[in-house]
Amino acid sequence: MSSPNVETDTTDVIICGCGPTGALLSANLSRLKVNHVILEREAEITTDPRGIALDEDGIRIMQGVGLYEELFRDVGKSMGVFRFIEGGRGLNVAPFLQFDYSTIEGGTGHVGFLCHKQPAMERHLQAKIDQTYGQLRSSSSVVAISEDKGNVYVDYEEGSGKLRRIRGKYLVGADGKTGFIRKKYLEPRGIIMEKSAKFRYEAVWVALNWHITLPTPESHPDFPLWRLGYTPEEVYDLYFPRDFNFICDPTRPSVCGRFGRTVDRLWRFEFVVKPGEDGQKMATPEETQKIIFPYLTHPGRRYVLTENVAFPADCIKCIRSRPFSFSARSCNNWSLGRVILCGDAAHVFPPFGGQGITSGFRDAISLSWRLKIAVRSDSADYQALFAGWAAERKQQLERSLASTIENGNFCNEPSRIKAFIRNWYLWVYQLIPSWKHSLELGGRREGMTRYDY
Ligand SMILES: Cc1cc2nc3c(=O)[nH]c(=O)nc-3n(C[C@H](O)[C@H](O)[C@H](O)COP(=O)(O)OP(=O)(O)OC[C@H]3O[C@@H](n4cnc5c(N)ncnc54)[C@H](O)[C@@H]3O)c2cc1C
Image (cartoon, rainbow, N blue to C red; front, top):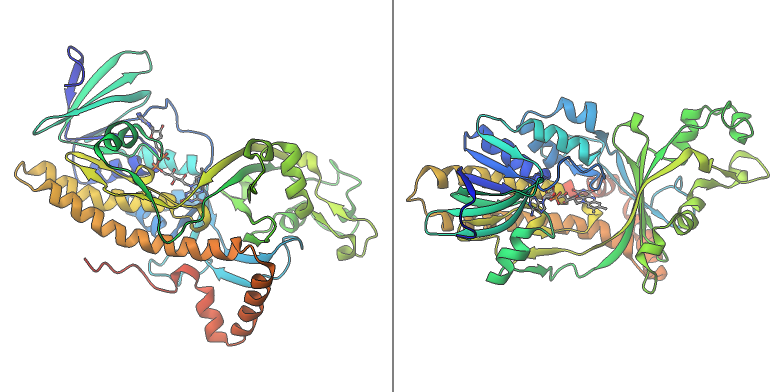
């Protein structure tokens, strides 16, 4: 065992990490009456909203654990339409292509995407951990793992520095893309993250979140649009449109849109860091303003004014601005012995398709019933169960990657000439209403995933 003479207790399933994946797994194990303990390094849910897009399958899965009203009341709202626009002409230009995710035409009966606040979603998920079967131990960092024939032993350090041990039949690493379970325990045993052969795009992007305050005639008496009769709410809609924009600018691909509830007034802008640029520097206010403010300055002629009209900068508060690198990768194996990887610990996506959280959810929901079988019977062939789970999941992962690639390719086309030809081709294509409608279905065009094996 990893270290002797430490206080030890026992459960059936140990989950390392209580992000969206670990929390959803716990909620499902609770429903299946499987005893489990979740060890989470942090004392509180991280307040940094990272993921903002949850697809309809994710909404369905949340509904499956009894969270639906909460989603639209506290967490977010329909993401509306994904608009693919040319760069350099503001956010209100007509798109050359759009995916209409405001409808319920997919396979689940839900809108295509929810734009959400990840911390609020995690808070609701954690509330679904049923204390009868599951226990969340916060401020508990996993530091060592060992296995014998029938058990896995996990050593973890509490916030006070005290070392404790827990014994379980299975350990699930839901500890994120740089998590301990894969990096320190499974990688030395041959489990590695492999790059996707289909999507080789790797890049650094800056993701920033802004909180917007509405300007008013009292706070900004000189703002020119008041004279034209605009209300503060209309000004907000003009500068921070409701739908999500993919800015397909060969010189600086970017995406932007609202997230969370309307009243939260949160805005995400992500842009690519070009070769030779420094990610940290590009995330500073001086650099981000140079890139984003042109989108927040409208030409005066739009309002029959002589001067351009900029949204008041003092109504914008930056609450996050950080570079992050991304690629499409997945582990060569998702389990070894009694240790299983789930969510970002097993696979990572570029952000264009909003597939990170939902993929972790799908892992968790389809793993939970297999864990139930595995813990119920000591004679169950757990290795075959988990291999079947990974084979099932990888089929769906391909599909998630395909929709991510589709969005990413539109956004990241580096050649102006190719982008020009593509846009004209799409314009002609969309003259046929049924073809246009088919395009507007976006990732829902292919229907729900079918599992062949
Ligand atoms: C800028 C950005 C934008 C994104 N946008 C989207 C989006 O729009 N849509 C989307 O679906 N996804 C998006 N993602 C990805 C999304 O955030 C992740 O896919 C998701 O958080 C993965 O959930 P997870 O539970 O698997 O891992 P995580 O959220 O990383 O959670 C892992 C948990 O494990 C804990 N942990 C780590 N090590 C230990 C340890 N040793 N002991 C105990 N606990 C430990 C951590 O504290 C953490 O709570 C984005 C990510 C970023 C960075």
